[in-house]
Each structure stands twice: as structure tokens, then as C-alpha cells.
Length: 205
Image (tube, rainbow, N blue to C red):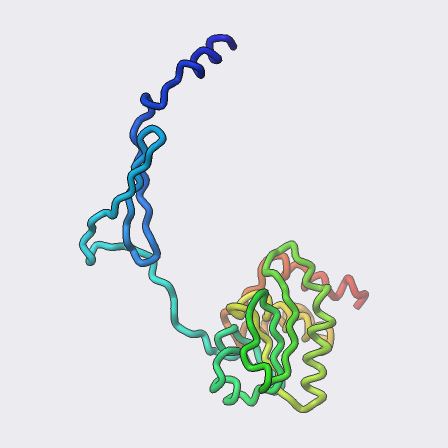
């Protein structure tokens, strides 16, 4: 123990080896960070443009709409933010189940925001009744409701499946099949899937 203490006390930063870290930005630009002791030097690495292997962000819009029922649509926030898509499908109500996604046409559509985190341990079932009531309201008003989250892959499909099970009496397998056939990208996270599978049992049906 004493020898370790002496070794720590006698340690000098000058004995540290030079350490290099390469950082690649989203644009593909490379930065080299070089540490020597307690000082750092940052330089841009010169790489021919044709050899730059940066990330390529996906900037294309996902405007694909899943028509679950004539009054019930499923999509992403891109569809909810594209006025021509909303008008094309005669949308009157928008159910936003994303977290932190803005409702961009508040004066033109009836909105309902139910912020749900896309995490397996989130209790999805706490939100199903509130979401289903809004969908039923839109239907009773002879409107068309678009249910969306961020990408239209997990939360919104899960809510629609919950609606079909709770208000339409469909089984989990039937509801899941319908949702995935109309919007193939649909894939609720494993926690949501398990909750929906157990939904009928929990409600004594």
C-alpha cells in the first residue's frame, strides 16, 4: 500500500504519452485532438473530399399515410406538418402522441397532444383511453383524425392498436396486422408490444 502511495506522489505529467483522438463531424470533416500532459492541440485533418466518410443525414420527408379506417389515419410528424398531405386526406383532427413535437396549424385543425416517451418501460396503457376518446370524438363529428408521433413507427402505431382493441374489439394480432399492412414501417417498441398483448387479459376480456 505504501509503495502505491509513493508511486502516485512521484508521478509526473511529463511521463504521459501523447494521445491522439480523431473526431468525425456530421459533415464528414475530421478533427485531430492531440493530448500531451495537460495541454491539447486541435487541428483539422486534411482528407480529399472523395474519401470523406461522414454521416449522411436523411432529409427526405416521410409522407406515407396508413389508412386504418376511413376516419382514422396513421403517419409521422412529417405528414402532420405537410399541409397538402393533410388536405389531400381530408384531415380535420390531429392526435399528436410525440414528445416535444409542435402542432403547426393550430387554427386549422382540432389538435390533441398526449406526450408519450418511446421507451419500453413507459406505461402506454395510461394513455389509451384519452387517445381513444379523441379518436371517437373525431369520428362522431364526422371528421378524419391523423395519429402521429415522430417517425410514425412506435408510439402512434401502438396507440392505434390500443384503440382498435379497446373500441373496435379487435384482438392484438388482428390489430397489429391491420396497422402494419397499412403502414409497413410500424414497429412498436418491445415494451409497448408486451403491454398490448396483455391488454385484453388485464381488462378481463
